[in-house]
Length: 575
Image 1: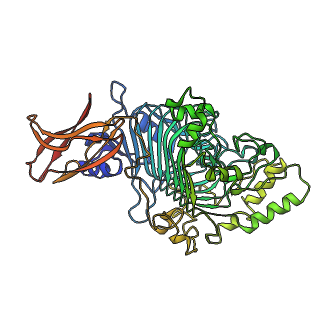
Image 2: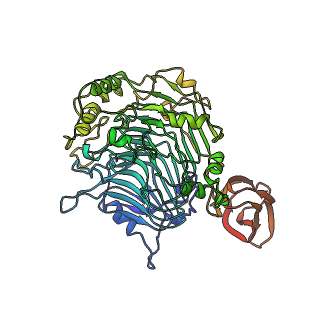
Image 3: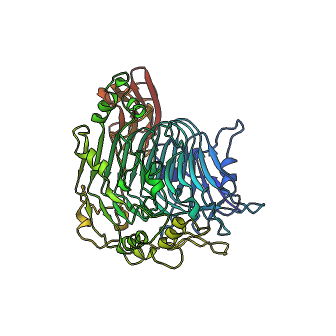
């Protein structure tokens, strides 16, 4: 029988460090074991008499078998799903689809539908392969964002074989902070070669506007489609840094009209391996501008819609597009890119033979994009330190091209000749075993061969850490206060740790600039400490440490004020 219970205050204090965006208390956390009702039944059934959620934090502690789901887990309030890795092996808890009574499998795991809420997913293995080894090819999805203003954090999560999207969103001004994650074998059958995507704006003409997106310290290994597709939609801030991207079939980015972005310290290996055929070259999903050659970094001019959205103050000005272009900021620094010889030779042989589907092969940056980085019309475009060099991955990585089962070159042929049916490509695609306590292989099979040997690249990043995903070398990454992440809410987080002695940390966000105060009061309403005292602060995210060593134990209230906005939270000092 599954044991489900509220955790002790000690565990909650630990969680305060892992999910600081949520207001946590001892009664707000539920520990869930894998043996018993499926995860959807546990979380969806976890409600009070009035229908509201009884808990907002779900602590998954089983690593000796997988958690199953029969239906989508939907929430319209804050949620954190946090795994506790095995203390000895580091294996994270795994969630995978069950097989339903009619033989089908559920395709969507989580849906977040509450405007201006937070979703946190940490230390998890989200597996899109069901217990009978079947997959929703072209349709499986791990997380869906369906409301405006949601802030999604995914950290140390493994996404495998979600062959549509890992994360999709169909709303405006959402935020995505994706760090230290692994996206494995997000491929599908040859007739669906544009999907298998990490992050997708699901309005395909770009009507949804995105607040900010940060992808840092991730590896994308055999992901057929885009690392990010915002289509034509506005993204206030975008960062793609310290990632490994290995063997995509199509273009990595659908971000031609990005206005404020960084692409730094990444490794791109064997990407855009499918190139463009003549139909793709004429415009569409590969580029907004017809006739632009396939490239990793593809930039295009703004149109009147995106220019107006970028800076509404320029609306009505006959030079709208030029004014907006001059304000764009795009940085591309210290990236390594490489196409292995087995792939480039195959391309040459393919195009040297008579084929209906001959291809245009990719480059790092096509001529239109190069021109924008050298044009006086876009002075904010900067590139430097990018190099074409082999990182020297272990042998199993280049072997993905030519392996007899799930080889990329065989899959290329199936796609480009139009005769493909059920073929796949991938890196040691997980096969689900029949044992009742089956779990995915751990550590990840690529862990050793992802530790590349190129000594130059290990010292080539702008911050001194190895280029690409530094986790393979034992270095995790984090997102601290970042001026690019513009909050849409005036918010005050729970202090952490809480209770504390003698100091604690408080985070808050400002959605506008102005005189700001953060003050602490005792239970009598007396002011005992001014942490921030009527200081002008810009919109952004802040973190302060509050030292209460000169005050007695007890309950305190801290308040955040700016203009007519005021928020309060409680904290406990225990000496």
